Length: 254
Image 1 (cartoon, rainbow, N blue to C red):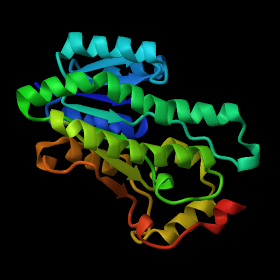
Image 2 (cartoon, helix red, strand yellow; image 1 turned 90 degrees about the vertical axis):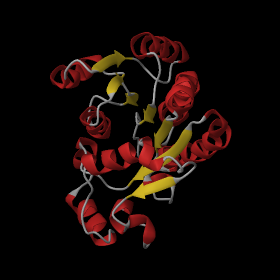
Image 3 (cartoon, rainbow, N blue to C red; image 1 turned 60 degrees about the vertical axis):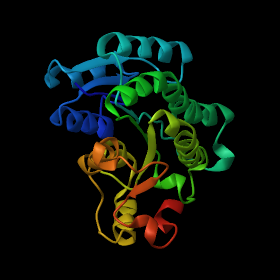
Image 4 (tube, rainbow, N blue to C red; image 1 turned 45 degrees about the horizontal axis):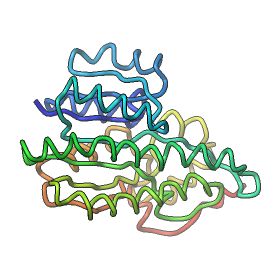
């Protein structure tokens, strides 16, 4: 049976991706640092999920998580590095503590998870000719915007990390790709995007709407599937065309 690991799995894109994997016959290790929220999310999903409450920015917790996945699943076909921290503010007001908090999860956590799970992915690649990493970046990692010095920089680094993984891990049969979501109707976006910002995004996006968590999950699942067997080292912007047109949103600068 195929197995996957999804970080940040207690909500949003991570939970939607977990459900997508379950629908296609995977067992899923759901990783999140919010143990209570994770338990609530995992409870109705059945016996094919393994909820693991760990902080991916902590090397010791990541090692423990990898050992648990190996014990329960024996390998891993797909790793989705979705967990992330969003912290928006001007450069002058971004303390080093805020900077490090964002980097420790968005970049360090993605690196630590990938490094720890590579042996499990390599085992699955050798046995089933199928193993993939999908890192979740952001449109903010592909284009600059105000208030995103830490977040945007961390996500740009995730894009480059994906290229490094593709170059080095291909010999092990492991593919590595990146999904860069644009504006998505997550709880976070609904909480921090004012009506003015939402209207500006609608004007700037060719498809004239926010995306859904399920649409991002569909792209992730495709990149993890055998149908994407010759795709590696790519970043796919799932953004309604936002990356293709224009720059900046005046509403974000107010």
